[in-house]
Length: 486
Image (cartoon, rainbow, N blue to C red):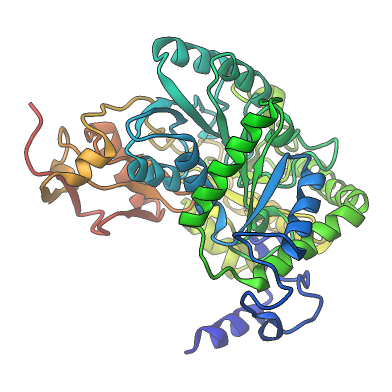
């Protein structure tokens, strides 16, 4: 079957998308214009993404004004391109980077490419739902005091599950030491457009912020933004230096053949928000609030920070993004894979992600009343049919400390050995292992594999969670450094 035929057939199955992209397959981001008609290269008057002076510059300038940044760049290689470029721009080989352990795998790839030494911040785990909490200012302060030679910091806010960190306080601590802060805000381009949402890192003190506008805004997959913020460096000379560094990095990591289809769609999205954000977000919040209120009827399924739950019940959260719908299924007689299958086969709802103990639905301004109602009715029926009083045992939590035996780059340069995962305790990994989605590493090259890591990987496989690795031989085999570390 052709890919196009499959996609058309899938569309005709009336499956409701509780996942990215944010246009939810109902917003025409090209105004009815066939894509082939505008699939151009750099022709007269179309400008050049890597040297913008015309219509692309004007569009990105409007984007900057909308998001209140000093400068914004269009990314047609997704947030991955922006994250790698930002880290490359602000670091030098051998630098120490302070980074949240729950960063996306692309950040670890950047650490490898740039030859950096990561100093990890481990987000605490909210045991009631099994999700990561916020990175705290206290963690950041302790880290920069212990490692005064840190050159760069990188955190994720909001997380995949919607947890926000205190960017304003964290940035102040870092800026006291002239350490720039990059924020992976891939899941938060909608933040700041309505008082019911937390403020964006763009206006909270970060230096560079990367957003995947395809995740929660009406834009096609692979479209993203990189913002340079003016909150730290009031010195214009410093801003211009960072501008040059980022532009030079993007010239390396972003395609030299950028898609005008993507850029036209991004421009259309920015115009839509510029003209209609108040009405769009007013209706969006209304739908979220109605759904949250109706989930009070659930007896066994708990929805994070909705229904009978609230952010006050989660002291490890600084704030929470209400657009995310995290559904705990510990009190259901279903595995997470069975829950996902039931949602798809019986109710025709495609979730964004399943984890060991919960499912995740992503919403956007393009969701409909019918979509929220379909999800609510599905949860109510599943709750009544599969609910049980005694919860399932919690899956082993994410690692809260690691034994780094060598840098990622050094591990990649070492001779390779292929061994059974069950016999790998104490060995040093040569590959990255992660659940996808969300793409957060379970094991990183250069780290010693521990009993708890093995237990978590095996538990995820048992629950039907997709776990990937560099060499793709799990759950049987893992690739490690050839010799054992004494």
